[in-house]
Amino acid sequence: MSFRTKKSLGQHFLTDKMVLFQIMDAINVAVDDRVIEIGPGTGALTKWLAEKFGDVHAIELDKRAVEVLKKEIEGITIHQKDVLKVDWPEIVDKSKNNLVVGNLPYYITSPILFDLLENRNLFSEALLMMQKEVAERLVAEPSSKQYGILSVQTQIFSTPEILFEVAPHSFNPPPKVDSAVIKLKFDKPDPGFSDQTLKTIVRTAFNQRRKKLSNSLKPVLGDQLPEGFDFDDRAEHWSPDIYAKLAELLEQSDSLS
Image (tube, rainbow, N blue to C red):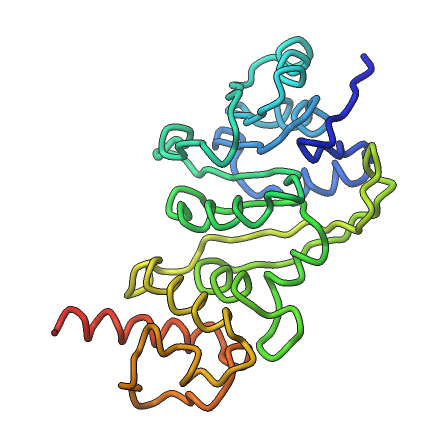
């Protein structure tokens, strides 16, 4: 059936079979594990997932796309919801590995990523299509132009790897940017600090990234700068493990005070 995509929902449906097969090849869970697809649209990838895996869940906001999925694909569980309002503990099966796969709408990629990172203990990994520029930020090295908040938080809470790039003509309608598929492995041990402490430090540091950290982190540290850190540096020069070390130190000092 013909399906008119909605610009307001950021819909760019993947139509390239070679890319679909590349995504399928990159999925690394058992056939009876749970695969959760974000934004399946009319099911170009979903039908292959349903053929290979016995426990497929799809999260789709567009009622028209949901009707197509119900009609075309058997044996899947559909959640007609906004992915940013999903209660992840209700969707995962804690007795299995849970993998998230999806072609993320470009305009809400960052909120989805932060949400998945926050709920990382529920998933084994995520395989996500996104704007190439955003994918490059996730794996960016310190001191590079792309390095920032997303880089630090993603690399502390997961192991990110860009698998391959996807050209605009692989979609209908074609987006105006290149895309990439990235894998996030949620294989990092629980850190010795809360997500909120890290978020506060990293976002405060990068909020004034041109200033020395002694100045930009004043709202968090005041004038008492802990030893063992170079606060004459700027935010983009600190590696993720240095931010992690500072977050752990701050939580320890708070619990002792």
